[in-house]
Length: 253
Ligand code: NAD
Image (cartoon, rainbow, N blue to C red):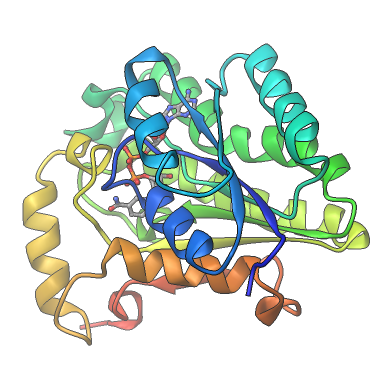
């Protein structure tokens, strides 16, 4: 399905990362992929994982550093000459902002969360577009906390709301270049980032019980949806937010 396609994956920290599940699904269907890692501490993990896949590239990229972003896209251009899809699977908020009441969010925590978790989608889309010479697909990861209040998710919910709106604006801008931009709203999954949200275990239990499918979603189910969105099967879909959450979001009382 993705033979001869080139992807760029932001957000692998370890094998539990949603980004890794997306990359694995796409690699299985023939894609070659570049991986970015945030900081030296994650380099070894990402190199080891990417090494399991054919013809992959690994480059450093902290999105708060524009020079890193520019260098990462230069490296992709040099290695592959173009890009077909990009998976944006990164987010961050200071730990203290992910517990207690939203009303106490500091200016600094707000700025950090919105910059890394929302603005970065626009930042990487602008850099990716010139490389998507044959059209392209950009996919980001969001969460239900953008739509409804989820205890402790706080400023990350606000950042995800900005991310979802950015998805629509980017889709409108980039559509004329045949670049599609979509979001996946994943149900809770036990990853490194998720463990930063207080009482994540309770949330997983609650959602697993209340969702129509009576379980939590898996990272590989999210990965398969990303595979669909970056493939030609989704050629008519842009600006959309697809819930991959075992149906949790449809439930009222
Ligand atoms: P993860 O910890 O494996 O991935 C988060 C990634 O963000 C890491 O690779 C980290 O290095 C990267 N990152 C953080 N700050 C960065 C920066 N300044 N520059 C570059 N990269 C940076 O956790 P995950 O759960 O796989 O998260 C991936 C995405 O999925 C996030 O956007 C998250 O909000 C979203 N999501 C997660 C869940 C869940 O329950 N795990 C649910 C819905 C959406």
